[in-house]
Image (cartoon, rainbow over all chains, first blue to last red; front, top):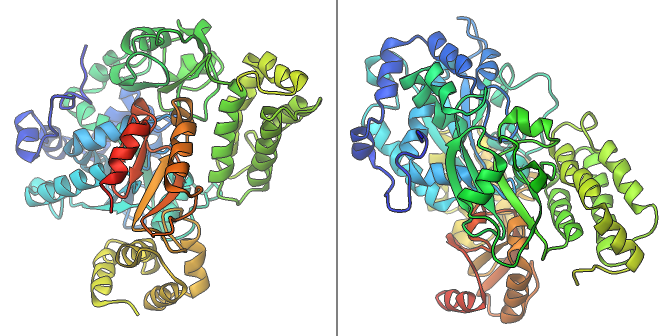
Length: 424
Length: 154
């Protein structure tokens, strides 16, 4: 099994500095890309690889890049922004890549910028990732000194400035247009789309925003080709994937596995199954804003298409386990409180609806739920769903709620009928 | 008034961006690092320096939860209250911190030593429950480990 993304990362390994990164073959993809491939060929390789964005939405990366204007008269400068604002509850995979192999991210960033002919790049990093910030600053300085960044990289004529932007909090900054507003020094309210960032992005210029894990795949696609990349996966979708598990399992953690590894294998084998005395009741397969699945879905391959068919989303690929010592209503309340707090406050269904949903769940959890509350929640799953808001925060918030009402309906009803939380 | 150190750091950051106002979040963070928090006078000073109105800058300052518009303690505790930590014992960590420090979430101890704030997921869910004190992450928390780590902050 090949693990290109985490080959340099492990509990016993120190993050490679420039010298050791190069000694392990680092920056050969960049040399190859800049000297032997045109930007169009890099774009084509990424499109053919089938790489889908690893930030949660799963949009094909090649398609995302294809909307960037490439003609001579295209507005300049063009920007590439790396979304390192990992804040989806239950998600801790980009931290591994940022702390463990910062040069891999830089190499992927330069190649991606080359592909779309961007002149300026930002890594948009959440403040709390302090160790990642230190290591990135160090690696960026090393890369500048070695001529992998700056004007005329490796004599190719292609130049790139890379800046680290350290943010100041708020989950909504991870939404790509909210992120662009944050980068411009504004409140991070998402923008109305269209226009999409590829044509009108940061400071009105063409901009691509890609997730950390997405970018880290690019050097490997350039080195080994699209066919090799597709072969890493067990299913039709290309690549490996960082999967994670948190909750009451024996070995919580994060592993790089072939895309399409089954849910059951990840939970039972890699995470070591449930801790003694705890039973699995359900799980969120890819972060807080994905629908619950259960152990009945253990055969589902964890790729974008299969998880969608099972009624949820791959999301970030980091699984959160609900065990039987925890109240499902309480868990959903925790999730909705988070989304209500992190709403930017712009769209009425989001800020108003999430407050009402949270208040309703609070009263159910406190044993003060009333008949009709579950119908009210179901109605809001529809009203806060896709189509009513500028961004995906509210629709994402409804995913765990709507599926909890399906899989744990009996638990909700017990709270209302018995006028108390059975777990208290 | 902004100090020379603050001005120098703000100008160094400003060169990264495509507009003058874009540095305002960095500028607020710089001021906060020197002074612990951002008071009204500093909002006015930064706004004037960047050619913004104070209200415009304050609308930005109040959006971001890591910009403090009220005095904060010498050390800031960010305790993760998101779902994985909640499952793994956030409730007891929060309760222990509250009783140990004698303050509620959002408050600062009377001696100005700690401010206790809830935080969105800190991205260390496999080591839950977790919190940060200033720039340091602490994982797999329990009462004993909290006692030990708090003692190292004066």
